[in-house]
Image (tube, rainbow, N blue to C red):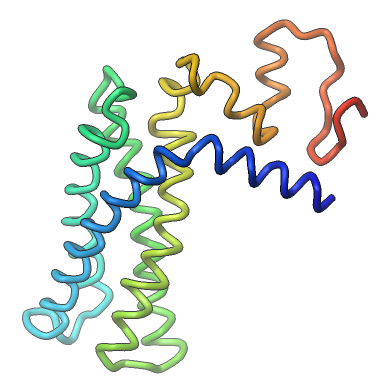
Length: 188
């Protein structure tokens, strides 16, 4: 089992290292934008509404992120249907933003920490890290996935992860029996 997990992790790393690097740069700049706006709002215009401040900061950072990811990180995989791409991107980012806002909410209302440092760490460190992990996989497999799967360089990505291999086998007309998740190669 550990060998299988290790093999899948290596497949994931080899598949995504180039994208992760660019995504990381965009994410770093978005983090600066998000954190700067969030801290400014906490100390100023929204000092009594931390969750709303996190949402506003996240929306501004999200718009930057879409432009940067569209024209740099995934520039060769942009969808022809810009509206569909933007809607998918916004849905995935709304979920990621909800993760960050939930971290602020839990910290303030459940844990009872209300100081700026605690709320910042909850929203802009813990929430942003969890949201970023979700966003990367969402962009790769849902927002920009179809275009990437069609490219020769990425054609076998899902096989490396054993994600959707049954569907891929069916599409290729494979006659081999489909494996259930977690079964070793050659075992049906």
